[in-house]
Image (cartoon, rainbow, N blue to C red; front, side):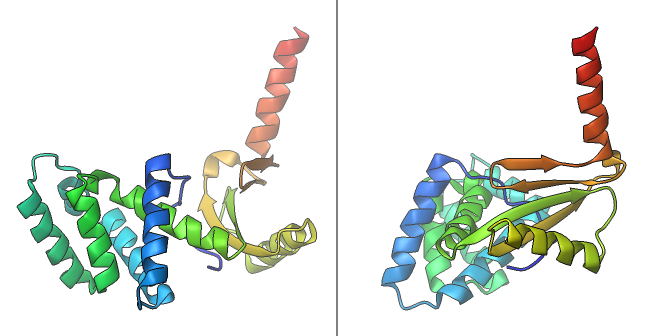
Length: 191
């Protein structure tokens, strides 16, 4: 992935990671093209993010197995999902885990990124970054040892200026709001 301005992929839970590893094993044994399947995973995540009715249906505990099978088939045909992903989503439905489908799909994408040596970088700025700023940040990160970078950008005007960069679990906060908060905490400690 390159610079992406998509829904944030947050760290998945343990259950989602187990499903992601199982799907990875299934994909390695199947004849499906992994890149194609991963594009389908992204399309499914996008549909879940953009369609509130779909999110509601996936989270509905009242749906029985036959209803969830119909939902999965309709979803597969509407989005043009391949056999591997349809089977996987069907398996998740049979395990009564459709409410966690987005998190599981996120875990699939993160596992793939990790296997390719990709480092996820989340950048939050007060206003959209310009190309020069983006390339300068990318060069600084590469100089710090992060070679294969997937950058996700967010805009948060409450930062006032500067940026917050998260690389894995490491946070670099150079925002004005962050500096003011640190100053305020220092003043409280001095009083």
